[in-house]
Length: 302
Image 1 (cartoon, helix red, strand yellow):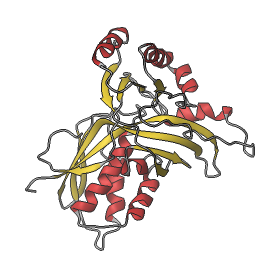
Image 2 (cartoon, rainbow, N blue to C red; image 1 turned 135 degrees about the vertical axis):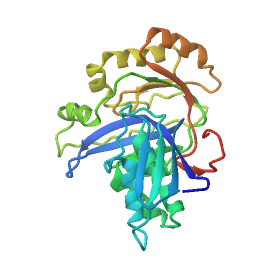
Image 3 (cartoon, rainbow, N blue to C red; image 1 turned 180 degrees about the vertical axis):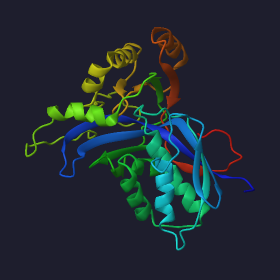
């Protein structure tokens, strides 16, 4: 292998709202959610190779065929006229595993874009979105990024007015939460199938400059906070610090606070770091893009 690799940058996300409105016939949950991409990125680089392989230095990330990056690459390769294509993929993880920040799904979206470019494939956008939906419920969002609404399993995406580059403070605990376990614990609280359920989670979402973020709600918080009360304490601390809204990230375990434009997050990050010493505190912001390909000579994503 020689030459510069191709590079994809893959952002994390938070859910500005997450409503679980029912159980689907296929066993998945029916969701209405508003996604927001944030300035925390994984990096994938790819070089042409005889085999399809993945390397990652994070011991929490499996590099076998179960990894979403390899599954995405394999799905894209299946579109090729000849299927002997290979790639040496290297994943640099910055988005924590089991944090509710969508890192694995974002990486899958990045891998779809990366391998299509590497192998000279030009599938229609609808085909790529179909592959994304097959890979996972959150994957399609990362092909769009910015601010977007998700319905169905969260995989039916409609872009929304961009929130703006608002400051976001993340609290990332030293433990994860299993999405499967959180949803299983929430299931008894669902309206029985056949009930009259009508929820529009993001219909009240406010545009940039409007300080009413009362639409922010996450139905899974009560379950996650009962499992890990310190997550609820961190959410409350963000609100006390002046957050416009604060929520669990997806099914957890990270928690985020959204702040007014121009807020200096450094002093409150320091105070929260002292109070929640086991948490990793990250000052970030909303971003208007999803996974994208970049010049490998460029620095960090942004």
